[in-house]
Amino acid sequence: MLKVNEIYASIQGESTFAGLPCTFVRLTYCNLRCSYCDTEYAFYEGAEMPVEEIIKKVQQYGNNLVEITGGEPLVQPMSLNLMTELANRGYKVLLETGGSLPVEKVDPRVHIIMDIKTPYSKMEKKNRYENINFLKLTDEVKFVLGSQEDITWAIEKIHEFNLTNKCKVLFSPVFGTIKPVEIVDRIVQERLPVRFQLQLHKFIWPVEQKGV
Ligand code: SF4
Image 1: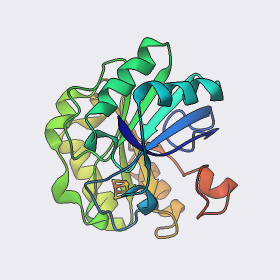
Image 2: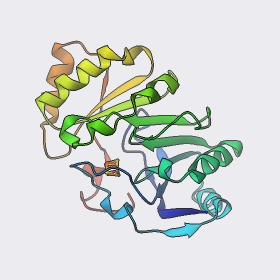
Image 3: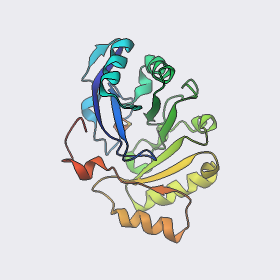
C-alpha cells in the first residue's frame, strides 16, 4: 500500500520533459520543510491505495510519461515497487525527489530528477551528496534558486561535484522571489552549461491550483 495525495493528468511543467503530456502520482509525506514549499497539502493528506490500483488509474489516463512526485516519494519504500511495476509495463517513469533520501535502490530505468537544496530553502543541511554517485548521465539535478547567493552556492556545488559531467543540471527560480532574468544573466555571463527552466504550470494555471 502507498498513501497517495492525488493522481492526475497534465503537462510536465519542469525538467527536460517540460511541455509533454504526463500523468502525475503525488505521494503523501515529506521529510523536509523547504521555505518555498508549494505542496504542503501533500505532507499528510491522502488515501491508502494498493500499487495495482495506482497503476490502473495511471492506465486510465493513457499517457506514456508518468511522474512520481510528492511530498517526498522515497519516504514510502513501496514507491520503489511502484516505479519498477510502471517501468515493467513500458511507462517512461520520472522520479521527483528532494535529494535527502537514498536513491541507489531506484530502478535504473527510472529517470531521476533530484533537488540539491540551496541555503534559501533552509534545508541545505539535509542534502545527501552520496546520491550524486548513483545518478546516470540522463538523470537531472535541479537547483531551485531564491537569491544571488544561492546562484553562487550552486555554481560552487557544480564545481565541487563535477556535476555537469555526471548528469543534466537545471536552474530554476523560486517562484515570485528572484527575477528569472537574474538567473539567466548569470548563466550567460559565466557560460554555465546548465539548463534554465520555469515552472510552466504556474504560468498556465492560477498559482495555488492543485492537480495541474
Ligand atoms: S521537498 Fe518538496 S514537498 Fe518537501 S518541503 Fe521541500 S518543496 Fe515541499
